[in-house]
Image (cartoon, helix red, strand yellow):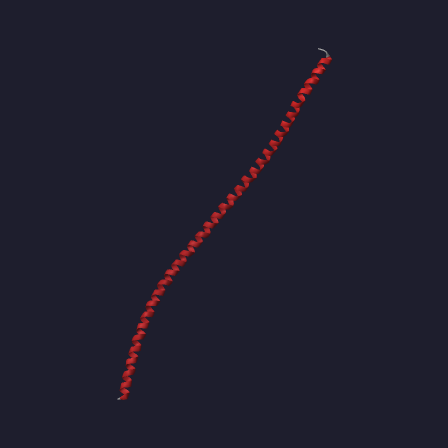
Length: 125
């Protein structure tokens, strides 16, 4: 083969292969863009996982704090119930005492009225 024929063949092959090379270049560039996007997605996913972890920790702390606060409120409620029972018992006892004293006052008023009437009767005699 002559040199010219070789050059011609090279030229033809180069010309025929040029679109394939261009297409491969575009594919490689697209592949590179996909890899970059995937890298960004992986980074975003990592940040999201870290944020989720922080939120879970905050939620755990909030739950612990809420339980503690709820326990304190339950204890205070139990104390208030005990105080209410004590006061209610004292109130019943005070009402019984008041009824008793009212009854006694009524008896004393009656006795004083009767004594007053006797004195008036004796003075009129």
